[in-house]
Image (cartoon, rainbow, N blue to C red):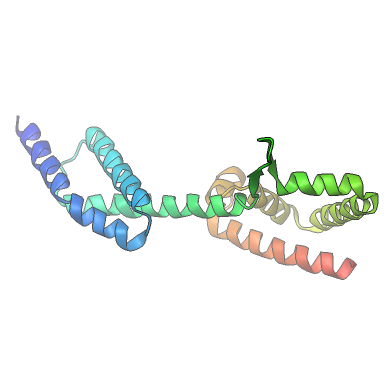
Amino acid sequence: MEQDDLSQGIEAELVSLHPALERFFRRQLHDSSEVEDCVDETYARAYQSLRQRALPLYHPRGWLFKIAWRVLAQHRAEEQKHRRTGQIHYYSTADGELRSEIDDLADDAEQQPEALVERRDQVRLLALSLEALPRYEQTAVMLHFSGQSAREISAQTGRPRRTVNDDIRRGISRLRRLVHNID
């Protein structure tokens, strides 16, 4: 009964922090739907954690805002990943067909064989330059451009996240130098 009283008190305190949590996310994010989503995600994680928690919670405000910072960090990472992978612009044609810039490039290449040959040469050059990178940089760069975060790459390769970030940065820099030197 004592544990139930404690958990009800914590739950009441967490609910009372809702306005402060909204202000926190509103200062960090500007889209009101994103603010609401982050607040909801914070409470969902908090309640899930409370159900699994064996020890009493003595500082609910600090604990809740620690969860909020993690939600914000994940939201920003997903936003950045979306920006990186969401560069393709889609549009609808008059007959309702969904097309992209890539479709337009493919059509252009079919109409202009020399453009297709030039693109193939560029792809070969990039592939050769990629093969010239050290194996760990090559892997990090390829996974990075496939849309994976440094944390995901770190988990796959077993290398520390900061090292993976360095591998990506150095790999891209070397790729640039290799491509420009071969030209």
